[in-house]
Amino acid sequence: MTMTMTEKILAKASGKSTLNPGENIWVKVDVLMTHDVCGPGTIGIFKREFGENAKVWDKEKIVLIPDHYIFTADERANRNVDILRDFAQEQNIKYFYDIIERSNFKANPDYKGVCHVALAQEGHTRPGEVLFGTDSHTCNAGAFGEFATGIGNTDAAFIAGTGKLLVKVPATMRFVLNGEMPNYLLAKDLILQIIGDISVSGATYRTMEFAGETVGQMTMEERMTLCNMVIEAGGKNGVIAPDEITFEYLRGRTDKPFESFYSDENAKFYSDRSYDVTKLEPVVAKPHSPDNKELARNCQDVKIDRVYIGSCTGGKTSDFLHAAKLIKGHKVKVPTYLVPATQKVYEDLFIIKHDGKTLSEIFLDAGCIEPAAPSCAACLGGPKDTFGRLNEPEICVSTTNRNFPGRMGNKQAQVYLASPYTAAASALTGHVTDPRKFM
Image (cartoon, rainbow, N blue to C red; front, side, top):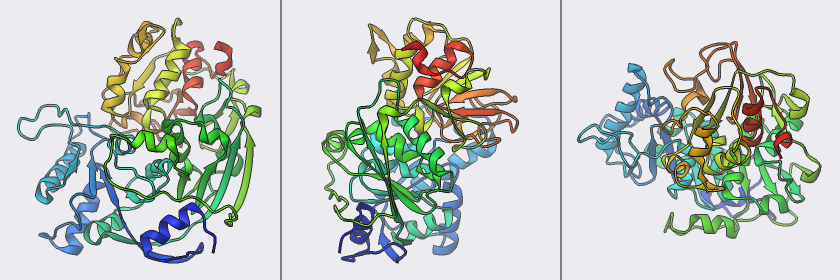
């Protein structure tokens, strides 16, 4: 029997030789991730159901990453991190990336940043594995050829106690992207195009598998952008076949063995959609939905108040490099916020150069606001003292993943989702701008 990549991964995890979409199976979990927003709830349910003194199923397969509401004076937010910290110590969790050192309460040099990018950079994302996280954008890890998806606190607590979960096998929708990527397009344009075409419910509880020569030429960070946003179409998970680019990224990050899986040539897909990327243009998602697609050039009359470059979707090193290439030698017309996804990305801003200048020098010379400490920051709104939060009903062009009312703060604010190129171009004009204007 032929199977898709996702079906093969789940078959291995469930001990079955074959699977069909719609089957309910118990799968063994390789990695469970939770953060400061959902971690306390997960911990509370775990203790209620398994007992106050219960031990987790595997202290080396749980990753705890405070990243959402961490640089704030909000007492409730800080309490959440305290709960994670106490649980990590109590359970002797190996991978707890705290923001402070417990011994002296100073900044922790081992703090990583936004969970999804940190998971990849620290080698927790491996082909053929099953990864669950209490965050909808856990599907980011599917870029590595694994089954990765977001879950709720109750499911996470069950995994913490047992190491397994009941899952329904999703049908797979395949998206084949071919053609050489134009120099004005990025992965963010492609996924916004796809979501706009199929709608925010177009892939509900289905796998979105990305294939084709365009994907094969992408860096891992660009592949992560594609998989990161499948949840915005309702997808259960996104997945890309592992290849030498995947393996090269993993070298030096993990020494754990893994097995790669690939869709059979005659595998049955729920649907097949093909794109010639050479015919696509820069797009944005207008307020207030990720599928409210429009060509960037058709929004040039939209005056904006600020630009935000950051998040697990648009705050990776390559995202800032792309923005810097376009901004260099110009001045921004609106406040432009820079929030690196991880500590590694933050450091890259001061090391990586373009045309003789570091990325941070390029941004600061252009008048951007100094890069913030790595975190989710304003992507999820957060407390009112959150860096970059939209506390007023402003119009913002953002490299983040959602633009629902109130997502980045004020409920009357308007957020245009865009690629780093489009965000950078918009910062230079003060209007939503097609990046080709500066290319």
